[in-house]
Amino acid sequence: MSTHGTSSRMAKGEAGKRPALAGYLRVLLPGYPDENEKDVRIGRVLTTAKFRGLKLGNAMLERVLERILKQWPDDPISLHAQAHLQRFYGAFGFVPSSGVHDEDGIPHVWMRRPGFGS
Image (cartoon, rainbow, N blue to C red):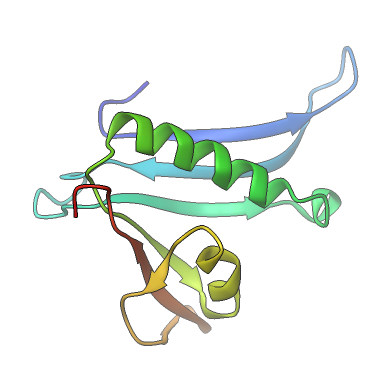
């Protein structure tokens, strides 16, 4: 595991076959890649089309938040969300920390969840 970040993948497959990617996310630790970055960051959250509607995104976020809060309870957590997913991330304690802006033609918003020590 990298000291700067980690990723989590969920895959499902049959015996003897390469499993299909079901979902993915990554975690970037404070100070990486920018030493001025103070938050733990969750990024690249995705569920592949075949596995959508199974609440896989909820399961991945629950698991990663558990791990982050166990290891870095006082650090705020931020993520760069597609704007239409604000309610989804809001259910996990994230609130918008920026206005909606364009990222590659898709409306996005920065969201943040304070650490326990914040």
